[in-house]
Every structure is written in C-alpha cells, then in structure tokens.
Image 1: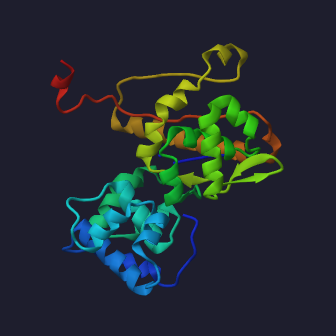
Image 2: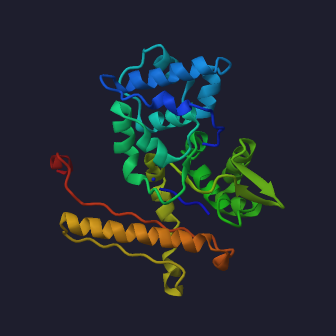
Length: 279
C-alpha cells in the first residue's frame, strides 16, 4: 500500500545537535552551511559527491552552499532533502518541529500543513528524487500495494518505458522482487507536495467513469461559500476519513488483488491577487 501526506539511513549519536541552534540572526543558507560544515567535519570520509547521491541534491549546489556562493534561498524540497540527509532523520513530523530560525520557518510553512503526527510516514530523499518522473511514480505506486505488481502488469499499463522504470527502481534498491512479483521497500512515506501535485493530472486520468455504475469507484465535486469554522470542520472530517481508509487498507481482513487508489483534497477558490491575468 502506498500512502502519502503531499530516508533509509543509519542513526548517528548527537547528529540532532547539528540543527538545534536557534538560528537567531542567521540566514537560511547560513544555517544550512553550518549544518553541512559540521557534518563533513564529523565524517571526513564522506565526499560531496557521496552526499549528493544520498540527498538527491546536485553536487554543484552542495559545493556552492559549502563555499557560501549560493544565490538566493534553495527550494523547500531541497532544504528538506539536505536536512534529512545530514541528520539521518526520516520522520517528517520530527524534522518539521526540530529547527528554529529561518530553517524552521521554511520547514514549518512548507511542510507543516502536510504533517499528520499520528501517521508514521517517513521522507526518503532518493525516492523523492526518483518519483519526480510520472511513469516511475505510478510504477512505484503499484509496487507499494500489499500484493505488489508483476512484469506483465507493468508492461500492459505502461509499456516498454514502464519496464525500463521498473528495472531502474530495482537497480537502485527501491523495489525488490519476490516470487516474480515486485514490492516497494518503503510503503509509507512522504513526498514533496510539489512532486505529488505534478502527478495529479495523470492520476485523475486513471479514473474510469464507465465503472461508476458498477460501484467500483466514486466521484464527487462540491463547492460552497463557507466561513473559517466551516472550512476547519470539513478538513477535520476529511482527516478522520483518511485515517479510517488507511486502517482498512492495512487490515488483513480486506486484503485482495484489486489495485485501489483514493484521492483526498480540498481547497478554497479565492481569486488571485491579480485577477487581470484572466482577462
């Protein structure tokens, strides 16, 4: 089963202290550079290239950060990937709550709304990087189901390209083969919300309207003007529904061979600050 909210690694003693400074008077890049320098000092045998592979961040970006030569702030997903790689912390909820200063502000504002502390999801930088490709994303989703998937199923759904992505995921130890079926090694994880959103059009295109009459799927769109209290009540109901859906998905009583996905989202329809762009 693949569940998402929008780091396989070892634990090293005292690594959390890398990011515990208040960050007062520091910039985001200053905090990240401090963490990077501390990590490399503690691990002299780790090269920039090795850290780039571990974090999914380009070696050039890491060198610029180390040399204090990076212009502007890095993207939030880059910040998250680097922090996870440097601290070997895979729990998104912990990463979001650990840091102060500009670093803490970026993590909380960018990823805090997507954290559900009662769900034990983890963030894995290399997986986050691999799943930026839509075909890899859908192949991995099938592998992450409890029953996994097969070579024939991937070929039938995604053709030669799907098989190439399947081989690449296996080569990079993100999936494994057991008795001619492919399974994801990490099933409950968090992705950068931007990555997940980029795949929504393709995900929605998988919806089979012709099967609605058979009761195999469900489709509703609803909209209305609400106040803030009403919005929060709906969000609370949807979060509770997500938890119950996950309980059913994980229950051995409902194990079967039908690949199933559920898409849960809500948003306001406020007009942009510059509505003239639509004129």
